[in-house]
Amino acid sequence: MSSGYGYFCPCGQLCLTLPCTAETLRHREYDTFYVLDLKMPHVDHLTKDEPFCIVRKDGGYELRTALQCRRCGLTCAYALENAPGYIYLNPTLLKEKTVTL
Ligand SMILES: [Zn+2]
View 1 (cartoon, protein in one colour):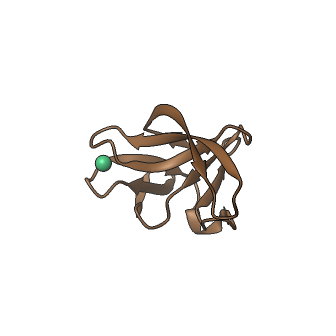
View 2 (cartoon, rainbow, N blue to C red):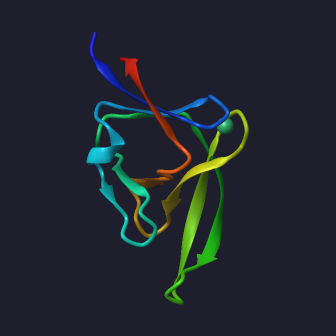
View 3 (cartoon, rainbow, N blue to C red):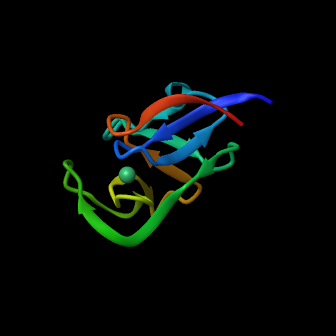
């Protein structure tokens, strides 16, 4: 058995499991969210909502899909329409705990 890192919603629901800590992932410069490459081994327990458009601080816009906690519906992460293969994790919401894989 090996250990990994679980990322929990404030409600206590497990949202994501990674083999390494999210601290080692790169941050998106725009909002400092963690960038998870979906090619990396991981298990996510998030529910996808409908895509929605946001206007960025720099005046551009982007289409996001909200990734929500299964239990409480809180948006813990998002995916970008123009960057398939990545999800962006909210570093302030998710709590890290070591888990056994
Ligand atoms: Zn939750």
